[in-house]
Length: 264
Ligand code: NAP
Ligand code: GCO
Image (cartoon, rainbow, N blue to C red; front, side):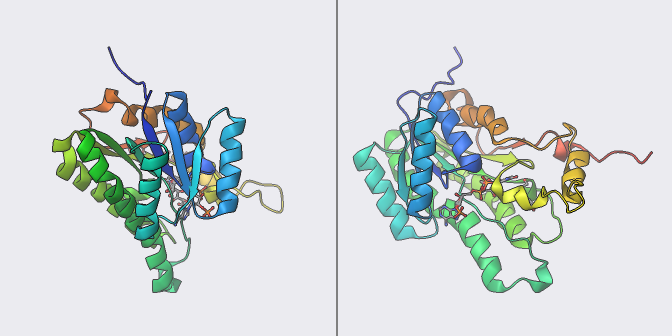
């Protein structure tokens, strides 16, 4: 019998007050998991807790910066005390800075690497001992099209998400023997506040050129919704994927498979 149930599992989703993290956490809750999330400040956490409540989910929210190892260790200890040890970790918290590389400061580049790559290292490191002790665990790293592709202005983000793909494979390699699976989920272009500037309607009422560009690049001919990621996330969090390890599951409407429309 295939088992997609997450009944009795504790799932920590980072940066999950809204957007992709919120949708994934809500899906994991629907499959039976107890949801714990963090975000960068109290206001976001309060908003998140209220949004989960409205969706009928009793989630525990905490303020924690994923780049701060002391805060992360304290968070994992607190979750263990108040909820139970983490069975499922989704490394979702992330930022993007769209700046041409020759104009980007090293400080900006470092900040993107710090949140998008060092963060998943720090949080994974904190939950691994508990998972090793229990003899099972699931880590899902939220990767990107930029784990595979480059484009103008996103050098820091692409470097971080490419690194996250390899961190995923390394965690899988190093901890597979403890029955811990680490996989990546690679969203295509998804409608969240992070991509809102790329979808802004132009002063003349026309679509943003990037909006039309993405629709043309996507065989599904649309942007993804955060909800498109839920089924794949539940699969990677459940026993149904126990022999899937070190894989990046791209949920991109076919972008990475497609060479692009031939000119008319
Ligand atoms: P989002 O709307 O910007 O949400 C990201 C969340 O992470 C925000 O709540 C953010 O807080 C939080 N965060 C930022 N820095 C943090 C830190 N140091 N510690 C804890 N939390 C922090 O982004 P999203 O679009 O839902 O993206 C979620 C993840 O999916 C990211 O890793 C992103 O790179 C990835 N992704 C997104 C897309 C897309 O098309 N949207 C596609 C592929 C991958 P603030 O609001 O304060 O920044
Ligand atoms: C960009 C985008 C991205 C996406 C996403 C793609 O500026 O190109 O914001 O990089 O959000 O990560 O998968």
